[in-house]
Image 1 (cartoon, one colour):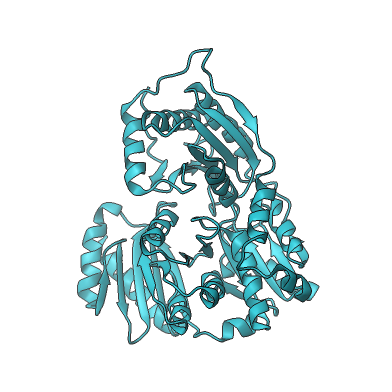
Image 2 (cartoon, one colour):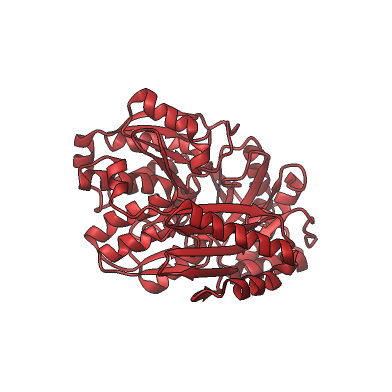
Length: 461
């Protein structure tokens, strides 16, 4: 039967996510997966689907539900097991599969889970395809396979090793030099899927690893989003171990955050900037970042004589813009780095390797590497706001601020280039909130813009 989406299921270009048990049940997940398999087949894209999951306690249950749904419509399933999201996406591309399904709620707390859908390119579905898929789900009854045509189920336990090998053989990396440097790295995987790849990759790059929360059992010891305020334990690990730096990833390992050798969190925004410097030093070209990414990436690009092109928030939006621009590197300010030479998806293990290479190139520690670039304060707030009132809110914000630059491609972004201040207001695709993000040369300036925006929204609501 066609699906009726539960009212509390988050439905967006990012997929379908919700709290396990309400509304995310095995029955719903099986129906969504069956619909995806039938949708791919009706679109002429084939019937070979890869499935992977992060470490959440609900992951094994829901991954089995995904496999059952796919098999029920005649799709052949390859189960990668517990893997990072970028590992799954890379495997889809490498195997020439028809698509993939990630069972992961990324940075959401442990009671959440989600399905993310990949095309045969190893990219998440873009807005147009996702819209067609959603329409298919609510209007069509997927044809089920008879007993002779039920899809097969196989396992692939080597995807993580292949991912590591692909990173280690990137021409941009000087692995012998990294091994010679022998950096000491404290690592926080928040008991997510990072535990199956990050320690092994770092050790292969010559690092001595001091791990915290590296067991991938899915019981997150803190808010799993790798923002600076959540990295106090990692900072303590850096100081206690005498590590040169700290690295933290989110549960599905597509975001990387940094802590310096003093145990001070530098946050996520520097990840893309420093990784971009490694790439641009070797191959100057266009950089693509989303509208909510810190302007420090523009400072880095400018130093190499290249430009930054902005795209709407969302990995697929950045990836598509990178393809259009022929970009050499890109990503998002949340710690996601995309290197087309590897694949067109955010990849925290890749980001970690590029950060280490940057430190090797510069011959300095992380704090000194970061100090080369201007310092900005970026502040973020989530607010409850009726989405049906957003257009009126955007109008009110623009009329009140009267900024010199306005961008409507993803919510509303207003900026004052001479003052180096900007504000971005948009609905979240992963949580039932509206996000306000502001940046300026000082925390005072960024907070002032954010507070003013929040006051305007209160007046509209």
